[in-house]
Image (cartoon, rainbow, N blue to C red; front, side, top):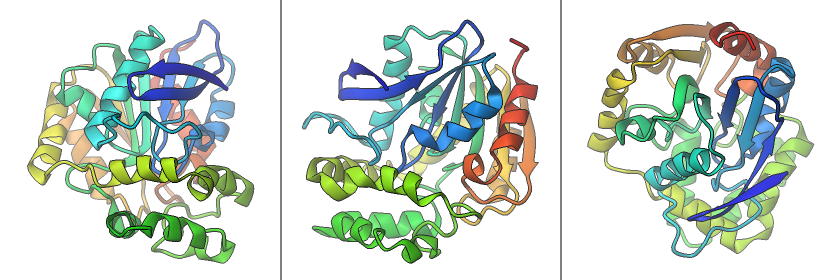
Length: 278
């Protein structure tokens, strides 16, 4: 694990290195970069995969007290990350978390050569679906996030629809989920960071404007959506593909939201088919 100091604090990341096309892979709330472990393996050594752990609850280093951890603030942090590592012509891949769409709306996408949007927040689906609404409710109550994640120490509760049951069709390995949740179990500062993010969703009009701004992204784009998604409506994937001028749409069967968990090789194959050969 490598780290870089940004305006909000220290961000850890993994970097496979190499001279191949740069692929930056972004995870969602209460996860870390290990979400992409099987996709990175499926892409193989021809690509340089850079996988940051964003301050969305699965991070181990609390952010600075004055850090902007709203949805837009974290999106700006992604842009800052690309600049700090001096990455160019990046293929930016997002799963579950859709905030990176704001980089296009804000005109901060010059380092992005290609965009890959897999099942994620879009339009006004912030926080997304039943799990997102439950997380938002917990964040509004003092001690709510601590209780919500303490309950997830009970492994059977992880497969319920209000928690993680609708996020992946197949159970995420418990050791992986334990690693995702441990910072929230052990650190009040990490829970504070997550709370700032969850409560930092912009108004609906702004969210819809982010989606509309995708019409200005004139580079290649790939939209990959889970055909059976219960949290991110499949219709949203089709709408995003219609908005992006140079988009391809791939729908993946037998998967819920977390395609990197349910169908990692199919996702890796779709990304490889979309990218230029290394």
